[in-house]
Length: 130
Length: 158
Image 1 (cartoon, rainbow over the protein chains, first blue to last red):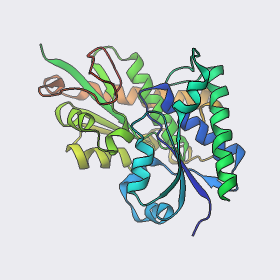
Image 2 (image 1 turned 45 degrees about the vertical axis):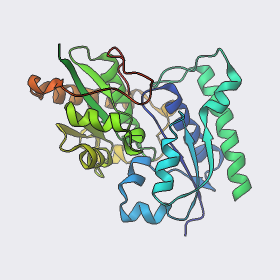
Image 3 (image 1 turned 120 degrees about the vertical axis):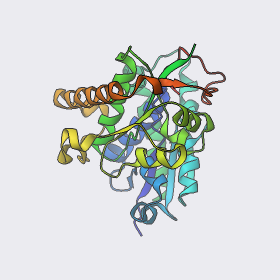
Image 4 (image 1 turned 90 degrees about the vertical axis):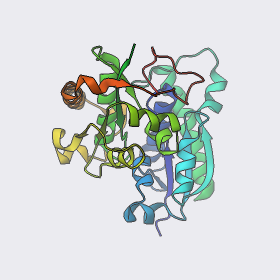
């Protein structure tokens, strides 16, 4: 079985927090922990196709959600992934009261800075697991 | 008065450039198209069982935008809300090699050529919206969105 931790964001399209989840995860898997982690398309996970099922079932997963609906976490669990950490963008955002982070299309400098913080948290968790 | 709306549901796939382009193009249509109220449906919420999102796609014409030929957004929408009004295969527009590029996925890595790809896909979405019969823009039983407390007809995202 592939040992890489699967890191899955919600990528919600309606609010900036969905983009923050997405960018934080991509920063983690491409820059911070490329050897230990990878992402899997959330929309693909939900199809239940054999290829993706084999990739996710029974694997350690970290989900990153942009809103309290926790869609990434729910969908990964339904697909058989083991969610070892549910990260919430809003937990980090709360530490930056009054700041604006950009739009659901593009992050601004503050948005970039906060996603770096979130990515560091994800990387820390990955390093604890692997 | 009837509400005039069209839903656009993007795969936003995280593994390849096609997903990023699908997302950007969908956002562009949402932000710039003024002829018809365009609503983006949040796919993860839709997939997680969002009743209002699924109901919207049953009532209003909805178009899926997929970054690759796995058609995850299209398949999911049809599974939960019935036949869609149209679908966009981004890989057909920007080429399979570009769509499946796994090196350039983050917004910050996008260059002008990628933004032009998003523009091209957005144009195709607009063309598809224009081809939908105006009679089908009108929903009759939509009650609102679950990501906010109440649906505001002025809001353009779900």
